[in-house]
Image (cartoon, rainbow, N blue to C red; front, side, top):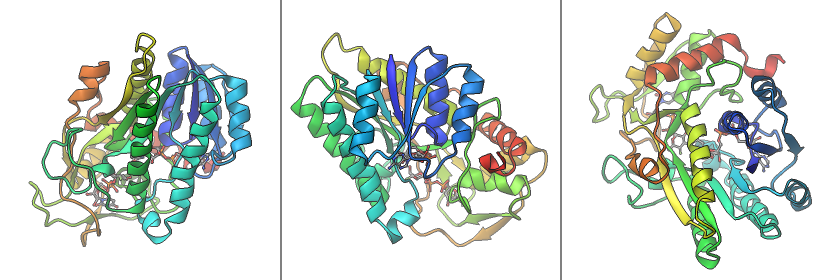
Length: 342
Ligand code: NAD
Ligand code: UFG
């Protein structure tokens, strides 16, 4: 299949690109490199020994997107390109609406001119807001707690309306829980700009000596050890879920599948302290920690009911928390400064 991947140079995008190429598909990447490095793309080329097209451009640039769509004639689109920092979206929401909502509309407009009606959308467990019950299944009520989450929920609604209006669409809304880890080669991985907001890249930078200690945001939650619990999922599992979702999109016997949401999680919760301990085991030295105040907006516990993706397209997460930490350490120790060294 010819698969167009927006945001393909990013963290999840580069891992998905690699799986897409290894599965024998053709790929074309669109990325403006606003939060990624071209080195990720060259490393995917080396790792797969496969070539692919690349448009360095913004999804809001209609001419650039239309040219890429016209030339590549995609049979499916995997749409990662978006801004993703929850805290920044609260302070300065407009870039989030522009990139995540308007950018997706431009992309969808360009696709209208093509015959491509298969679309996998990067959504997030953030659309569930504060959990009302656990594990969270796809029927859980949806709500918004920040502008980033609003962009995901708005796009989910728009994509649902689109599929309702035209039954030839097959759209998978993929709601990721907490993607972490790296490809087994250690050649591609997560490389955030500045101080990492998220737990795993922060721990990895402590382990490699770039930061002194992990600040544990709250140890007085109603959880077994008092620290926040999340459903961490290996990025390679997330990447493979996209392949399964695209196959599902393609398998409608000529009919579209409509628009369906799927959780991408493991169904297991891991606390901050458990994660720090597992990482310490992976890197061979304990991770120093400071107990810090709770981070505003955090919930105590979130984990997925991941069964729908397995029932519908036969995907389930395979990797353990130890494997997530080992692969993250493998990447970070080989690339202490991320991609910037190249
Ligand atoms: P990332 O920042 O590493 O990747 C996003 C990529 O999109 C980057 O390469 C960036 O340069 C590109 N991009 C951003 N705006 C663009 C634009 N206007 N035009 C073209 N390219 C643009 O992020 P990621 O972690 O790989 O996340 C990928 C997707 O998954 C995002 O949509 C994100 O919201 C979603 N998601 C991520 C997580 C997570 O924890 N990483 C969780 C839930 C959902
Ligand atoms: N944490 C720390 N110290 C840190 C960073 C995080 O203790 O330095 C804790 C948090 O308090 C939380 C847990 O580690 O308990 C996980 O935090 P992350 O920031 O890694 O992840 P979140 O669950 O807060 O957020 C992630 C994505 C969001 C998405 C959300 C819901 O980053 O984009 O999941 O899906 F919206």
